[in-house]
Amino acid sequence: MRHECWHCGGSFESPYAGSRYCSTDCHFDYYVVKSATGCWAWNGVRAVFGYGKMIRQRRVVHAHRFAWQRENGPIPDGMFVLHHCDNPWCVKPDHLFLGTLADNIHDCMSKGRLKPPPIHIGQDNILVKRPELRPRGEKHHSNKLSTQQVFEIINSTGSCAEVGWQYGVSKSLVSQIRNRKCWKHLTPTMPRTRNRAHPPPG
Image 1 (cartoon, rainbow, N blue to C red):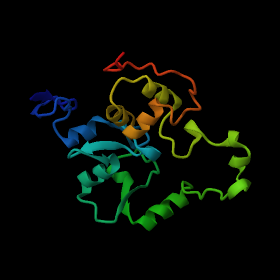
Image 2 (image 1 turned 45 degrees about the vertical axis):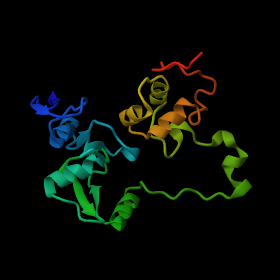
Image 3 (image 1 turned 30 degrees about the vertical axis):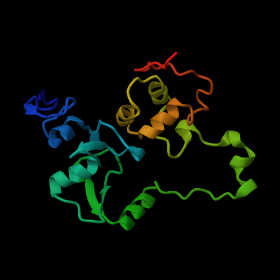
Image 4 (image 1 turned 90 degrees about the horizontal axis):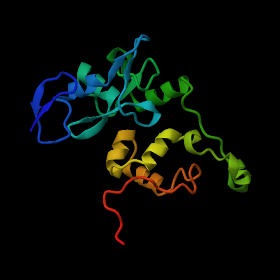
């Protein structure tokens, strides 16, 4: 099956109907935006904490790790790719450097991004006494989505896997959002409006 690369415009052969790029390099370059600040912003799917994600050899990898490998070769076992610029979405090789787990933790702490959570026990937990203060939705520490994106997921028509890849989250999270098992504080009584490919019998 012949395709036209979205980045370079070249023709290439692929057995997959949704193929868009003739190579991983073209996939990477297509989503890179060189900003005036000197950083190379990843404009594709981003994971938790803002790190870019891309497909390489049918597997999901971090874009900044691919950027390092393309410029410098394989990453040694046990090493992390860190940022001089402290922008997790940046993929410019000059802004990246290798470090150990200890280096990574120290780097996070020195830049104020690694703060231990307050310890609360049992009934002394303020969130037990005042549940209305519990961080939800966009305020939750592990949140990956905006309120608008949650509404888009609820009304989306693709499969959970397809929608999850589009928004950089797992298919199980998409299923939980659609079935009101999470983010239910946002739309506690809102009916599902997305079209189903196969309507229920009867």
